[in-house]
Length: 469
Image 1 (cartoon, helix red, strand yellow):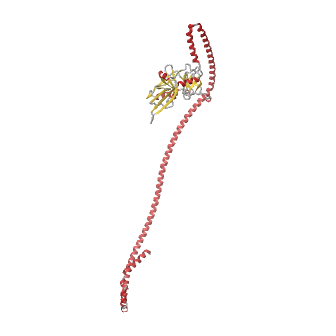
Image 2 (image 1 turned 180 degrees about the horizontal axis):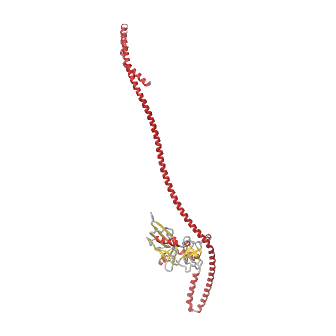
Image 3 (image 1 turned 45 degrees about the vertical axis):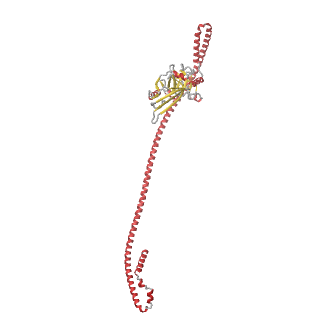
């Protein structure tokens, strides 16, 4: 039996015992004992009877109390058994609930793991998708870059093949050039002999004129006229030192500034070009001579319309606007800007004349405006193109430090007159005709449209022989 229940029962019985006991009968007072003492002998039977009666009554009370306590105990035991059954049932339910709780907790942990795994998988899937997307974009960019690189390599390959072909042609031309040099040397010797003969004739004529002055006074005017003509002829036939030609160029060069603007997607594109040039006359008008590369326009760009074109020519403190540009019919890369005669006089620059006989001497004087190089360069006539002459651009020329032709270089004759301008690194366009294929007015919204002009220039340029391009 449970110890706690046994203690409760003992306490309950003790309390009943104490409550049911009649202490006034069982314990007489000291006074009664003292008074009863003298008469104890006489009253002994009565006292014993009372004691018996008292014990009987106490026993009955005790029996009743015990019966009540037994019934209460039975009731308590029944209640306790019922409670133990309920407690066992509750413990069983508790065990079942604990098992269910453990199962539920285990299921919840598994669900949490699954949810975490699913979340992680979803997050990883998103990261993988973003990574795949980035890799795809990188692959696309790499493919585009490789395609551009392939196109660039193809262009380089094409250019390399062209250079190889040019070198092969140049190697094939070496022997012909040697022959030409020998021929030029022979012609130069013949020219020297001819000049010596002419000088002897001039000397003889001068002597005859000197003798005639004293003899015929009426022929003084004629002799003076002939002397002037001879002096002019001598000056025209006398070659000028390249140093003097370059010094003359430095003293009379004109600086050109050209600006072109075209609309853009976000902002307009502005292109500026600056170069040094000279003023040249065809006998009627004065022009500032330029190569197309000295302007904002190129033959390799997509033909487009520029909405603003402006320019200026300056020399010292003098500055005049460029009002018009002429694209010559002679070559699509040669451009001139007309300059009024009075304006040219105000600028104070020398106006160069075109060489009357550009092929008289086998050498020409090459002047480069951008880096200050100059020097004598052999040239020869191109039989298939009378408007061009080919200058010496051999590799040996560059290796030995001599000046090699370059596009935009000015070419002067040995007399100091202007022959033309280099259109590429081999050929010079011989000036003689300033007829314009197009005349472009500067300012806002120039006419005709620049896309039309550039398209025509590109078409004419591509139709030229490869060596002239």
